[in-house]
Image (cartoon, rainbow, N blue to C red):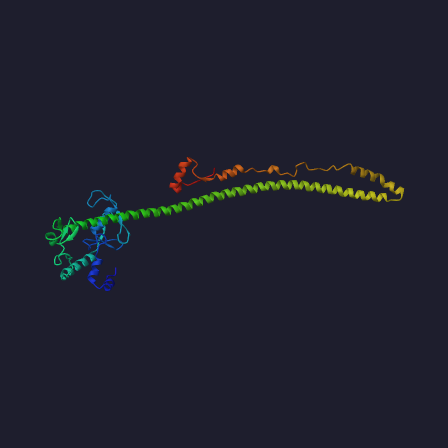
Length: 349
């Protein structure tokens, strides 16, 4: 902390210095001993012990025969987590520099003359200082108001005793509030951890789900290729048989066409002797060709591919039924999965 720059900015150095020496717990000037936290902020040892005890209610106090591993609490100034050893607050180092500054400040204040008006004065009796506390009306007042004024019938008490009591009560309330803030911070930390773990678990199950579906895709692609190959093989065999028949019938047609041309040429022969030399054999060949084709034929329904019909409705129903669950005790399993995402699994029905 830059004390020098702070003092220059303020017109009253002593007043500014006093602000730097205020404990954030009791809101009073530090009382000895002053302990320094790892984050370099200071606390009265008593105040530090109060918030430490509030944050660690089961911690064994100093001097007990039971050995404890320590505890933790958060700095009320910066919320930095302070981890203690088995000595607790008594294991913290004293800030002797701050203690010396407090001593010098108190000596300086005691040597300075009391400024007029530094003590609150009664509004009803301007020359009377406020020195008592009216318990009935719950307001500070002066002795004259008790003797002659509006608080004559009221019950009063010394101002200092009420001051100490309310100061102690306020200090306890502050400690309680600081402890409550520490518990809230602990819950926030736990929720942040839960948020992080939820994200990590969600990413993990997404990766697992993607891998399982990728495996399904690979199986389907492999089976698709296998079935297509079988259809292609059957197609090639049938087409090869048909092509062979077409070729055979084409060859027979070519022979018949040539035979017809030869017969027509013979009919144009004018000489009887020449005609008779070839006519008998030609007639025999035509008769044999006219008896019909002895080549093979395709059976009825040869072109059909009905044997490759595929019914996948039951498999489609199974794929549609894919859902999250363990497969045992469906309802209870779903509730457990919602409570703990790490229980989420993928089941193929």
